[in-house]
Length: 289
Image (cartoon, rainbow, N blue to C red):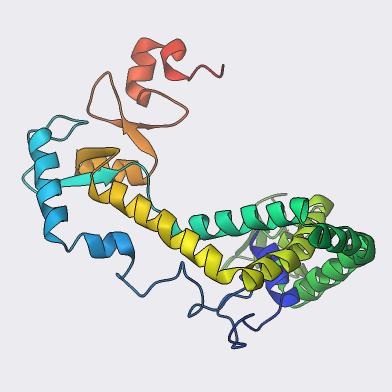
């Protein structure tokens, strides 16, 4: 989706809908200064709460509750323990969840907005917009050229320093001295993704209208939701006490093997590879039902 993001940035407005300054991220409707969900470094509410005395007391109580032991591997590490929160606070998700919900409600309940929405879809001419997006993608592709094999068109080439011919193709295993220059194939995007961008561009007009129409109300709701989540964060709700090794595993979407309790595994499995060989496939793979 990196290429689609570039195209979306090109087609979107460059100015913030409030202050009129150039946006740092053209996909969003607001600049960083006007966006409620963007904070200075280490100034997010949950980071600030960690500096309070109440946080330190609650953390100490949570560690004592776990008997200063990792709740996964049941070890008492010398390097210290981490209180891991299962539910991370995603400020971006909170804000856009409120904006999207508000936009959908206004389109559904407000007759004026509903007429504008219907008219936007009729006047938008999806085909014309798709052609415009395709043109932007083609322009992006023309500016990005790659060296390819003249036999199979693959870009998996090895350049030899001493041996002749100079080039070797890893795909078709042929050797040659002259390469083919072609556009980068990563810009050849399925039509369904182009249609998705076209619809998003139309919907984004109403996102901007919703933000401009009820920014104060949305910001108030956002702050209330953040306060609620920060309170849960402070109360140590839905937390696990982990050693640094187990905590690193959670960051990589892994869990401790319940059989050997030494190695880790990734979802959708439920044991490490070595224990799988001993126990068998029935234990290894999650039941899809």
